[in-house]
Length: 419
Ligand code: NAD
Image (cartoon, rainbow, N blue to C red; front, side, top):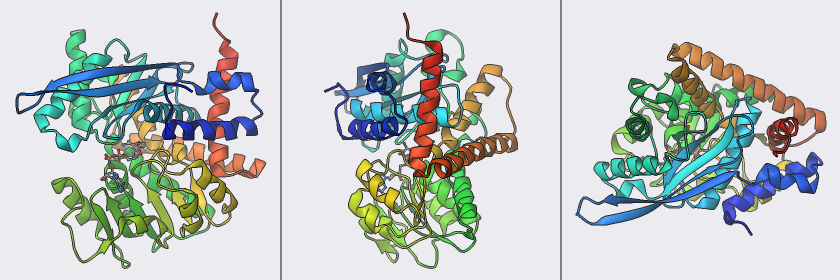
């Protein structure tokens, strides 16, 4: 029993056990690697527009501080709880280590449906959350970023609130800010661009032509919409997309640029077309070359894993596949090429790192430089995962997580156990 108990934390713990067995990590060393270093839960009261007071629960978990500050997004969703936040923080640690960033993993969130708040209420809640976090975070302790349900505007409110308390602008406290508030060019697109770039690396490995290939994308927020657009720009026919309001399917390919515009102006896919409706449940099992879950965790269970009909499974979301599904996918690894989440969506944290570096140096890069460096980091990580999976004849998730866990373990061993 831990305070983190819950299905998402259990999933992160199970995944870690698989890797720890594979790496033969002694039992008495496992807790030190898996259990989060620190966690905080806060109550965030705000005035509602109708004059009442509402209180929302917020969390932040810092997994380990061995390699530098912790880094991780902030999720605003009704499902958020301490266990989910802890699992996401742990995944961030393996991800940062895999791509070679000087960070540990963190995550935070508020248990709230942001669509139930007015803009003023959302600003009040964002600012109150950051104010409650001030004793816990800092540009050299823990750096926040966006995740599901949060965006550039919320990051700007976080940064402004922190800065007002410091009496000076501290842009480096948060990444994913608007460019006008110290953000970097290319951050908003970074995760989706990275997913599409890695899909093209996987296609090369499979000797599969992307031009004319088909794709289905679950989730049409920051990650899903940009991934769909980038794939579309590479000549891929995106035949299905979905969000929390429903799904669309057109075998000849959807008009992704129009859908992106629609979602940007309406906030969702709702109302786009009655003609191309699809049962959202069916999207993940559609026959397609590239399948991109880019919404929430645990959407692919063992049964669905047996029914997947894609060639490349590109995990844009964090934790979309359960450990039971992993066992199926491991058996199907000759049929389905997995790009595991900690590699697939790591473009986001890579460019967040670039934003932090630019903010610390007050020296800003051109977008071409951001993209070139992002792809360079992703290519190196992809090559390492690919080489490891071939060397040890293991599944791509095992290879990716093993590299991440080994690096954190190596740093802990070198630094020693204090005192
Ligand atoms: P977002 O809030 O911008 O978008 C989430 C999308 O998922 C929305 O379109 C929403 O309608 C949809 N959605 C929610 N529940 C759904 C369901 N049950 N079925 C289908 N669609 C559903 O969030 P995001 O930033 O795009 O994050 C998506 C995923 O990517 C999350 O797992 C997040 O942790 C991960 N991620 C995000 C980033 C980033 O830079 N934003 C980086 C790495 C990983």
